[in-house]
Image (tube, rainbow, N blue to C red; front, side, top):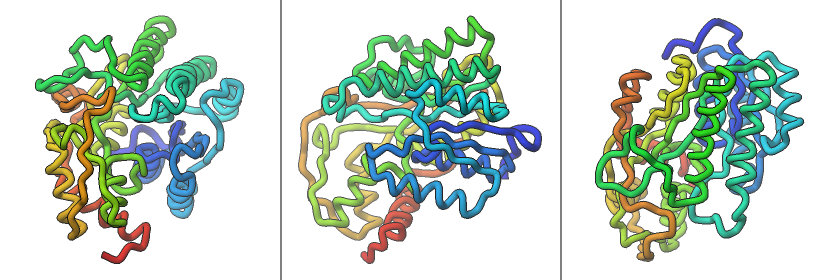
Length: 328
């Protein structure tokens, strides 16, 4: 087991803790003996029952867990939470994710990701909580056949989601310079694994193949992604919380590309079933290539991704079939 972040009775607030990555981060930190406060609004962007079941799984095992239903868009509520509890560190993961559904609610990235994040940062500042790790995204990078590096100047985002996340990085830097707070922004690359989001590619592909429904394959499958298993993402998040950098932006990824058609083939192999593919054009805001240079994460966080895509997909499919009681 990895070493605990710090001394006994460390209290860490996780926003979005009922979400996919938040759940796994909470589980690891609870395993290490930390006290965890989860703040989540349990919204219906995807099945709230999955979020509830994640929390039930944690609550059935750990005593050092507190769950608060609250929205980061509500500053007064965030202020109350920070004032009520002695919080040592913040892991800010709450966000509205994705790039394809933005026309359904064009303001949500601003209200949740930008305004909500500002509320978290300001509530932390007012409570003298100075150490925050927050989720950014691979989406801030533009399409390139070269690995994405943190030193790249990325100020022309291709999606509202990416724009909101890039703005959060700037906001964190400003809070660092003005108030001496510590921030580490982690640019996640295509996280996947058990308990994953129902709107993720792996979840959608698996569900549709199981149900004999066609899958949408964008850009005719000519897309390349740096798929990163959730336990590897968690390793980086926990290391960032322990490291407590003054201000850093760091890629978290496997550091390898996988073609979308190969990814689908691996799912088919694990299900023992072929997919019916519906070839689609490239979607607005989607890059063709997205993969990371992870040398900075290796240097600063001793980050070493361990799970291959082949093994990671098998773990997800095994979980999916068990969770939904599917007999293949």
